[in-house]
Image (cartoon, rainbow, N blue to C red; front, side):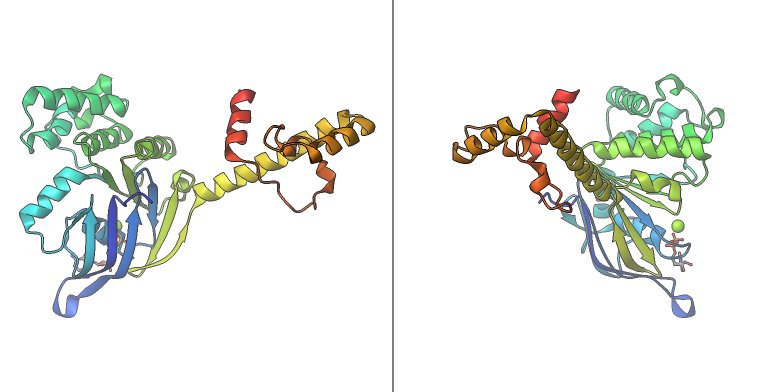
Length: 309
Ligand code: ADP
Ligand code: MG
């Protein structure tokens, strides 16, 4: 299995002090795989922002451990944490957090300037990141000249420009209308498709659900459940394809004369199975119990799909 990009183990976080003490996280374990888009969902006050802040090395856990890009944050100094954050994590917030007096380009390149990147390459990379989010034509625009959706794109460009492997987004669609929210989720999904990157989105927006590989549910500082809509959808697709293949085999069989069919079956039974065509193409499908979904080798299925294109 691929090593997780981000891993929290038994994380506890106590915020405030004295009478105002709040146990915001009560033992949370979570890991994010490369190429994964995870949603963290839960009611207001359940600890989502706190968890994101701990995972992104903004807050240190009261107990438990966090590993970012394979590095443990245990015992890390504030400088070490800042470096981990800079090298591995990109943040996206509901309210964009752009500097109003800087252009889109300068808002993005700022993330590289703080690392001491030479100006020419910082500008080139910032332009590249803005092109990735579809804003190549707005590099000189100020935030006030951009729509909410465009401002969020600039924020995403800033999050990815330094090649962060982990993108943490806190309610990134909350301030946007349906169309812009959808576009932002599509963009984050595309970013997560990069096998070296992962995206964790905090949300209580049900419109984001179809984009997720995995949804983790949090309540009162604890993880209470997990669903995998993308995997479930893929399994559904696979069984649909298998059923369709079975139907195609039946239709094909219908075309074969009964006598000829018998002949083929007998021949097959005695033949070298490797030298012959895949058995499922000629097996009498009717012989199978109805509830059994035929298992088709992945390679065969892929080849067929390619052929159908
Ligand atoms: P969510 O993002 O799910 O709405 P938060 O992580 O912001 O939840 O908050 C979790 C809990 O911690 C809430 O009860 C909230 O009131 C409390 N909390 C958040 N920040 C602080 C703070 N700085 N001091 C004390 N309590 C806090
Ligand atoms: Mg929050």
